[in-house]
Every structure is written in structure tokens, then in C-alpha cells.
Length: 247
Image 1 (cartoon, helix red, strand yellow):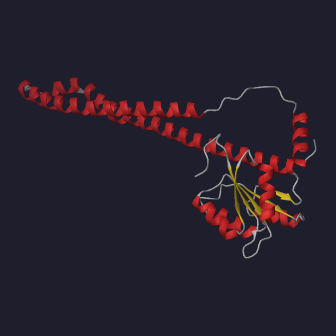
Image 2 (spheres, one colour):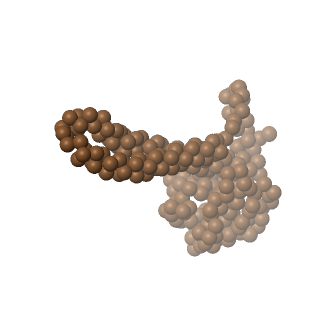
């Protein structure tokens, strides 16, 4: 399973050259938990056993290249949402386009610039966290909405329908001249009504409790952000310098 929001993230580095894995690990530690794989098949086994939060994937590898590894990752429901960043000496546009078409999140050309690698990794992990948070919150909101619908259904069909019958009791009294028979009918119906209403009220209480718990879970998941005025031109300039490696 992926790490929980805010926890230290795990990155899998896939490269057939041990020295390249060591270089990347040296750049990214101690901010992340780093794992290494020297082949595509080994990487897939590691991912299946314990999916990382991000994969740095070399393109040129023997037996199974990075494109095939990415293709298999994106074909699996379990691993398709893991962001993949290709790292390769191939920097031609057609290779970059192929990687993006396969579902890669980004593409970094060798030789690796440490500031660029750190910025790209940080960006993709932030995006993945945001997507995961929104998915969790969306499911919670859908669940809360369904509870509200269920509650409204109970009120309309289970409570309003019997109430309509009670409203018609005066008309019923006018149609039954035999008071003894009427008392027997009312006594029988009264017992059934008490049991029925007790069940309905219990169901309504359960729905209200569930809805309250769902609303509480949504509040717990909510992130608080501090609002501040930001100059977009300055912010974009900082991002561009960060991604290009300029200080």
C-alpha cells in the first residue's frame, strides 16, 4: 500500500547500472526511503510486493526496457497510479513523447542535475498526495450523500405512508357502525404499529449516527491552508528556475 499522507515517501530507482542507483540515492537521501532494482523484472516484483510512492525508471535496460516496465505498471489497477519519472540519456522529442503516451509523469535527461531531480520528485509526490486526498474525500462525500438519500427515503416511504393512514382514521370510523369490532381492529393495529415505528426510529437513529460519523471523518481529512497574496509572475519564475537547476 502507498504511504499515508504526510509520511516519509518510498522511491524505487530502476537502473541496470549500480553506480547510477547509488548516485540517485545520494542525491535524494535523507528525505526519502530509497529502494533499488537493476532490471525491469526485479522492479515489477518489488512493486507488486510493496508499491512505492514514486518510481525513477531508466529507459535503456537489457531484457525489458523502461517503456515496457511502464506499460505493465499502467496496465495494472494496483500500480497504475504510481507516478513514473523516466531517467535516460535519450533526450530526443520522440522518446519523451513515447514515455508520456505510456503514462509517465515526467522525463529527466542524463546527466542528472541534483536540483532538477529533487524538484521533479517533490512535485510529483505532492501531486500524487493531492490526488489521493481528493479521492478519499470524494468517496467520503459520496457516502455522506448516500446516507442523506437513505434517510430521506425512510422519512418519505416508511413514516409518511403510515401517517397518511392515520389521517384517514376519522373516515374509517364513519364506515364501521360496530364499535366492538372497531375496538378489536384498533387494538390489533396498535400493536403492529408500535413495533413497526420502533423499528423505523431505530433505523433513522442509525442513519443519523452514520451521517455524523461520515461528516466527522470529512472534517478530519480536511487540510487547513493559510491564504496569502501571491504574485503569479514571481511564482512562475521561481518554479522555472527550480526545474532548470538555476539558483
